[in-house]
Image (tube, rainbow, N blue to C red):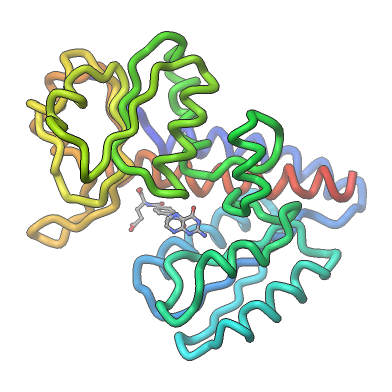
Amino acid sequence: MKLINGKEISTKTKDAIKAEIEAIRKTGKRVPKLAVILVGDNQASQVYVRNKEKACAYVGMESLRINKDATMSEEELLKLIDELNHDDSVDGILVQLPLPKTIDEEKVLKAIAPEKDVDGFHPANIAKLFLNEEGFIPCTPYGMMVMLDEIGYDLDGKEVVVVGRSNIVGKPVALLALHHNATVTIAHSHTKNLQEVTSRADVLIAAIGKAKFFTADYVKEGAVVLDVGMNRDENGKLCGDVDFDDVKDKVAAITPVPGGVGPMTIAMLMKNTLLSYKRRVQ
Ligand SMILES: Nc1nc2c(c(=O)[nH]1)N[C@@H](CN(C=O)c1ccc(C(=O)N[C@@H](CCC(=O)O)C(=O)O)cc1)CN2
């Protein structure tokens, strides 16, 4: 079984970005800048935002972290986003999800200027992904494609089963796999005979948010497994949607949790922000 090392691949990705930003800095031009808005006190979100800030510092990008408490109104958030849309020094804007229930997430994501939407969640960027045109690719699906490329895995003609149909992972990664000529199935909570469906996957993408749900009898011998899950097990330990110990002797390759897809999400956010800078400044 090959461990697909997200930490290693994300560092390689970030090092390439770091070199590009160093070269920009030496020209005397400003460096790329990412604005991150965190509303409320979700503990996990605070970890992820901190990881994003650390990544910005690592690659030499400027970051602007804006913390607001959960009482922030939707109107105030929309106003803040509008200010950042018009701030010419800001290349990327993201609002950390989830938002408090008092705020309409869809409305907020649509308020971010598509050309600064480095999460790739704006409908204009979703449409470009759908059409296989260049916009911004959502970071987690993007990172999964980079990981497969890094291990030399060709999706062409392969059976890919995506379990989970979120707008930020399941649906976009299914589209990316389709663009790579895979035969794609999107399974979800209403799928019948799930075990039968996942057992035919050459590549199984687990993105349902259920700790250790996928055991060996859900996985084909020799499959590649990408675990997007970010859960806590009975001991409070971070774990994925896949029962790693149960499947490790059956799969050809698998991403660990932690240290797999998560760090790649952050690295691809850096890549999208640098791309935005290049489109806007260079
Ligand atoms: N605006 C966004 N919100 C959210 C996104 C997103 O892409 N944009 N995705 C997820 C959370 N996420 C990014 O924000 C994310 C999740 C996990 C990690 C990560 O590095 N995980 C580590 C473990 C971290 C820990 O110690 O808890 C790992 O897997 O090794 C990064 C980013 C939902 N919200």
